[in-house]
Image 1 (cartoon, rainbow, N blue to C red):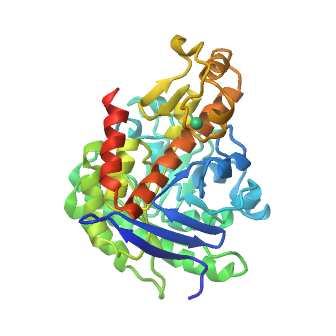
Image 2 (cartoon, rainbow, N blue to C red):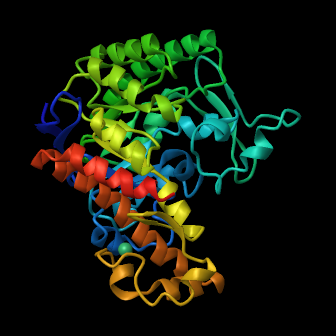
Length: 408
Ligand SMILES: [Zn+2]
């Protein structure tokens, strides 16, 4: 089946699951491992699409849930798809909406990262408040965080929304559990996600035929199973063997309840089961130490809102750890955030200027800090790729980790 989508494995990390590779999509290639900046609502907050290219981003990940609610996926379809709508000509991803609709119903904020600027999680998870999402075997009913209106996502709806959004890589609709759920609930949710994955493949196949004039969209199946080795391995086996009318998943997303110390184990379990010739996306990961663990254990792409969110709160990355650039010591530092950083912000502006902008609450503060943070994280994963190519990954990791975390 000619699709315009393919994945080629490059160099393998010795005695580990990590590797370099190249994902080809109808809108260009992604050299992996790669960090994919998140443009939740079809924009990387405060940053122009032109800057995205300059800071080294190879692709953008937007959110199906947000774009379905506003402006509406049919409108994005009419505009020519996500990339055209936001004037980004490179590859795009959308997530399935599963995480967002379900995180309205349970205490996600306590266990894994989510966009706290978008959701007032503390309110929605309070015991005496009505939950905003309800899951059953057929799908999820949820209330819009914008106006309280009632909506329903099923695997079919998620596929329809993501086909309208038109991203190159889309994700299966899954039930995202938390570490608070019981083992028996995790088993039940995993089976539900397996059945939903079959329905996603069916609907994806139907839509791919119906919309054959549109660029091919690759569907990644999402693996759940929380912290349980047997469940994670089962999910990986089930989804990699799944085949509906000749169609199987083009890649895989690793998501769900993850506790920081088990990231490496979970990745190892699933990547030992998954076929090596398909790409693996690690959902919602963006801290430097987690990225090293992710790459080492065989994840090819990553996304996370954290670098942008931290930038907007004046927290910027340096090789010596994160720095709050609005603090008093930076007021008279007439040099860049990092002397040897090639980003637009560091080439043109001083710490003193950024400090002033944040204190004066000027909007461009967010823009300049976001450009630097995204450049730092995108660049860090690009350096990991280079280090695998050069056979220096572990030296690079040790050197980076010592300096970054040694000074915290
Ligand atoms: Zn910089």
